[in-house]
Amino acid sequence: MTDAPSTTPAKDPAKGFLGWVERTGNKLPDPVFLFFYLIIILVLISVIVALSGGSATLSKDVLSGMPDSQIKRFKIGSDGVIPAISLLSAENISKLWVEMPKTFTHFHPLGYVLVVMLGAGVAERSGLFASAMRSAVRGAPLYLLTPVVALVAMIGNHAADAAYVVLIPLAGVLFASAGRHPLAGIAAAFAGVSGGFSANIAPGQLDALLYGITQEAGEILNADYQANLLGNWYFIAVLMFIYLPLIWYVTDKIIEPRLGKWVAEGENANYAEEDKPLTEGQRKGLRRAGLAVLAVIALWAVMTFAPGTPLINEAACPPEIAATGVCSPIANWTPFLTSLVAGFMMLFLAAGWAYGKAAGTIKDHRDLVEMMTEAMKDMGYYLVLAFAAAHFVAMFQWSNLGLISAVHGANAIESSGLPLPILLGLIVIFSALINLFVGSASAKWALLAPVMVPMLMLLEISPDGATAVYRVGDGATNIITPLMVYFPLILVFARRWQKDFGLGSLTAMMIPYSIWMLITGVILVVAWAFLGFDLGPGAPMAYTLPGQ
Image 1 (cartoon, rainbow, N blue to C red):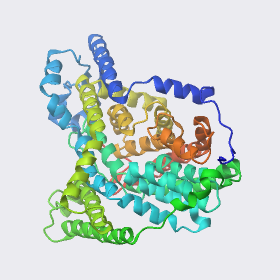
Image 2: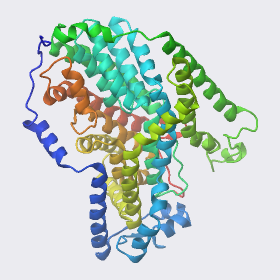
Image 3: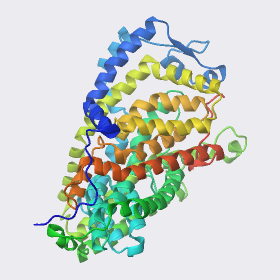
Image 4: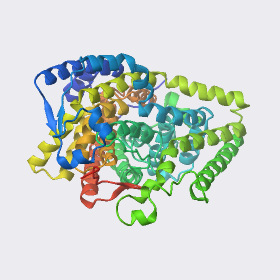
């Protein structure tokens, strides 16, 4: 048996900077234990800072806008002084043990993600996501193969694991079927799914995950802050249309020429057999799923725009009061915005059920319940991670260290004279570097948000802006860090076509995408901040704390 010819020499992953990143990252503990170790460090720091009298002072404007509940919660003095509080104080030790169930179950990301995954699990296990991606990519004209793969890959992020497991190996088969190098197809799909992790035509599961954490962080300074699941919609849509031509250009002009001409030989000679058309049942399922999606959208439209609708609270900000500037009309849409988590769950559930019944993957309601149960089983690790993250975030707030760091950070930035848009660009780069060592998007945001969100709020940047800045940096380096959970799987997919394709080969292939995604992401963030565009419906980049 003759293997496909090698066109890219394998590199030793143990050498150079990438080898150092791999070795260093592999020494880090599992994110669950990472949070537990950080809690221990946090306790020690809180004791030291409290004993040394560490504190920060809020301005009078910020203090006047804070509700009494927040002032009492953080023990802020009448002069605006925020004291550091030891986590070994009797009150905090009691709070840790007595409120442990509450701390865990009231962790906002937990409910957001579990609800959405009840529906997404059915859509994935019924085969809807896989068939939809195959249908979208398979019929693409040859000259549009790369952009179609990239587009479906970015939209496929809504399918979570399915996008990695189905689309990326399928892209290799499609490129090979077209006489192109299959590794170029894998690279384009990987860049779209993972590099374009936060680029999409509409919000989805990732927004539910990140905004749950943003909600916790935003409440540090504004107890009435309400996360808007559509808060980054405009931004991620623009990001997708920027990344699309970028991935197209890098794939066709940089990666594929470097790979050289590919010739199907040996066990790869029959690769085309895997590129099978959809069955009639699968096509029928997609049509039924489309109708189900329209039905759910129509239901939400009725509940939003019909007279006496339950999803619009017109009393929150009546027109006569809105005209005075005391409140924003977006407040009327709060029920609609908060209903979107349930809306996405219903959309995925209805579409997955409709597809499964037509395609034969769901026989009765017991199959549906089993798929929802399996989806919750897959969330087992996330539950453990959320338990650790919830206590880290809560204890960070109990110690006041997050708020103190945010105030001092905001003051330092103001005194530096650094333009705020440039600062946001630097935060993108910082997030990208952190991503090389901590692969989980939620774990990183749980670590960074308690400081980054309040700090930027004090600098008049909204929590939506902080979330957008973070997610650009997080996505750009996903495709070059061996610590990303799917990195070894992508290596397996690539070795199917080239046996000596190593970790260094994969990283080298993806670096051009990563560099250009980071550059364009930084430019977009800086330009967006300069221009002051809204990031989503009712979600401006600028933010004013109550009382300011």
